[in-house]
Length: 618
Image (cartoon, rainbow, N blue to C red):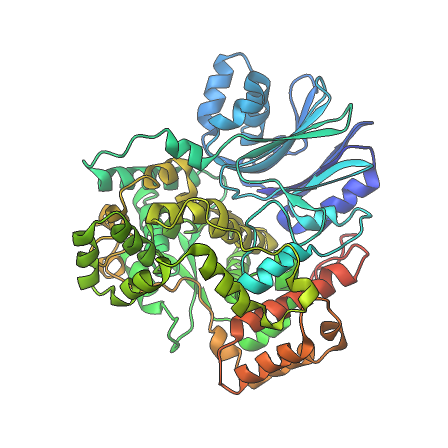
């Protein structure tokens, strides 16, 4: 796991500055390759082949192709054997070298053979081009920017900001965040002109004529269109086999591998599978706990620890620590985010770093694969009604889904556009009119409102993209590689077309996955109906006098009052309603505060900056 940088001209000082901005992604080593056509930079976090043979940028035998790579190709050993048989020579035991030889052998289509997470850039001297690629679901990030000088790219926006470019907020993305709370749903970022390479996408930049071409090499929707329905026999067994094979792949490492542990089904299944596969090894886990508060999961965490004989570690962030860390948290994330629960993950990753870890497994994707969130219940019930599966609807109604049945009958049966317009009108009360009247439509679902359609939307557009961004930035801030076994494409593609009643069945969410984990995960975990995750006590914090004082100083500031987004008086009214207990406006208030701090850190200061907690590299 590393950080990559590059651009289409020669400038040694600039590539060093980009590398310096990404030091947290790779504190173990750095290097660059520069010629008259390109500058490539790399920061290394050593995970596989810790020797200098794994140093990047790396080239092929004759130096005609150079690569900078961030991520892991889990099936690189199988690829290596195939490539050796085809006559390729290897000088290291890295997956990086497997990529560059795979490119020599199969060209840009080599990515279709990879199982992993990645962003990489290959400088192909023979064809005078840069080839950039991102993995199927965007587990690893890659950003790019083009101007009259050429094209430049980086694993983080911080790298691109080392260039002398004008920093402007993207008001369309800002509106969709402030009004609806959605982020990372499209190519555009909060920075005007800086784009994200999309999941499952390649970029070819022709160095001779400075032209760029994008190609979507993986599309889950298209993959599902060509798949036959899964046979009913042994579905749980197949899910378990795929899941454990995904875990097995993600244990490949030359340094110890630990795991996050929330006490929920997903993280508990990961940890129990790790113990089942890596018998005799010491497995360290890292948890977020809030003793005495409703979101505390210590009871379940302790049960998993007892059952698997782990070395468990936990952290309980305080409000004082949050206030101290908030600038660094926002700097770490680079773009605004939804809730303060992100701070919980930030602190868990910090704890793991303090305990010497470099690799953790985490459970992102389990809820989207197998319908773990309660919001999916009304999609399922709506689908039952729409397709006249009345007995199925009644079974779930009797199982305790009365509230969701009411939502289905009274909400989803109305015209979609009318519902969204009502949402838009309700959310827009504090906006200045000229901001509100811009190009600000809520992105509509492409696939409809059935259960599998909703899951597909969340995997490709709404949920997974921003969760993976949070995961990547929080882990890499503390120089930790986070691996997400639920996002193994084989598991995703198997789960996606399963019948809805295999995911939600008679009041039980994640039905088939729970069945798959029987005998491996404690029954008390598998029988849980609540969903918490790494939650923080946001509502308590938002009414604490110390935190409200911190918020008030920002809300009353001249800077916030001068922004072209919101009506200052309305923002103050929302804040007053909240602290007086008349309404829970914590979500809206946080988005405004997050946006304001982001503007101060990234836009108001036009010169290259470093994290509020990190000193510039000498």
